[in-house]
Length: 125
View (cartoon, rainbow, N blue to C red):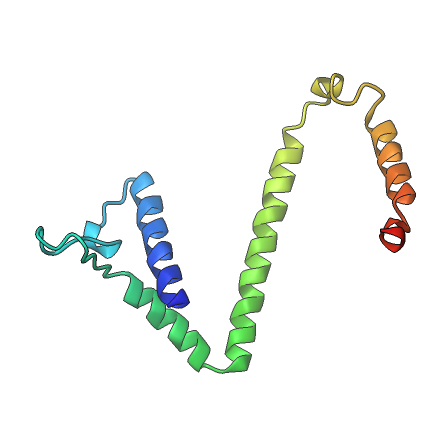
């Protein structure tokens, strides 16, 4: 049931993302009601495709699963690094004055002091 829920959600997410890019896909790929009188019945044509891909990955064995998991992890880390690098290139340090009145180094020094102060807190608590 969990895999079906995730595949249904992923299908809706993909269809909405493509729609925002101007790519029109039939609404029944994400989910539609085939009979107006049966509003409780909502069929997704894309969810079984996602489940099929997941089934092929799982049926491929532990090595295939580990390879795909590793590739997805590399992709996620690459996206995070991309966002950090892109964000760092757009930093305007002149706007830091109200937030860091004594500079970034003073804030980092205070953070290090607080971190050191909390060492051993878990022992007492």
